[in-house]
Length: 358
Image (tube, rainbow, N blue to C red; front, side, top):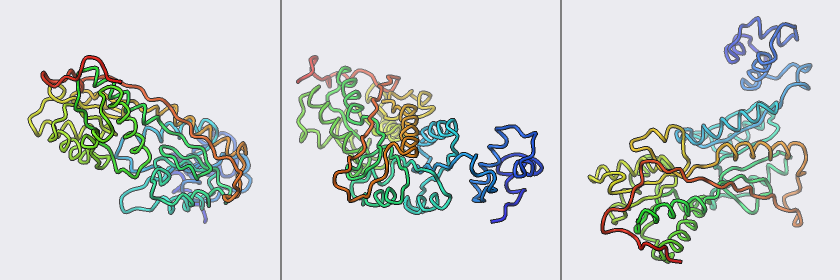
C-alpha cells in the first residue's frame, strides 16, 4: 500500500515535511518525533521502508473488552506505557457489542505483523469457550499472555488478581462492622473470575459468620458488569433483606447504590456497598466508594515482562499435543481493601455476633 504523507502526518500529529524527512532518513528530527511517525505507519497499515524496518520497534497487539468500564483503559495505559519503554508499539483492539470477535481482532493484528499479543478478559476467562484457539496461535509461533482468567489447557503465561482473597477482604471488613446478611453481586457464572469470587465469598462467610455454602446461595445474584447490571443484582439482594452488598466491579457497586436509593435506603447508614477494581475517579463518587483495589499497575507490568520473555524465547513454543510440555504458571497478585464512605456499621438489630465463627 502506498503511503500518503497527509494521512501519516495527521496520525502522527506532525507536518508532511517532517514525515518526508523521517522516511528519507534525513537528520534534524527528534527521536520521539521519528518514533511517532513510524508508529503512525504501523497503525495505518503501511509498510515501513525496508531500510527502517530492522531498527524499528515491533508491534504488540493488546485486545481488551469495551472501554466503558474505566478499569480497562487504566490497564491498557499501564501495558502501553510499559511496552513503549521497552521499544515496542502497542496496537489496541477493543471489543464492542456487535463488533469484531476476539478471533477476528486477533487475525487483524496478525495481519499487521505483531510480535506478540496480550489479551485482557478474553475467551480464556470463559469456561464454555474452546481453548484450542490459543493452542493454534501458539502453534503459529505467536508469543501470548492472557490477563484476567485462567484455562489450564492453555500453554501461556496468565496474569490474575487473587479474586478469592478480594472477597475475603470484603467479608472480613463487613463482618467487623456487624453485618451478617451480606450479598454478592457479580457477572455470569461461566467466567473464571466469577467462580473464584464465589469461592472466596463462601469461604469468608463460613470463616467469619459460620454460614455454609448452601446458606450463601440466596445471597448471590448474577447479572452484567454494568451500572444497570449492578442496579438489578443489587436491588434483588436488597429485596431479600441484606444490609451489605459486595460487588464484582465498581460499576456494579454504583448501580447498587442507585438501587438502594430507589428503595429509600441510605448508603452507608442503612446499606453498605463494596466495589471491586478501584477504578479511576471512584474515590469521588457520592458517597466515596469502599472497594477492593485491583493491582492494575503490577499486573500490567508483569504482563509485559512475561510477553517479552515469550518474545525472547524464554518459553519456546511447543506443539499443542506434546503431552510432557509443562504448562505456564499463573501469576496471581494480591488486592488491597480501600475503605471509604460507602460502608458503615450494620443498622441496629442486624449485627452479627461479636466474635467471628470458625
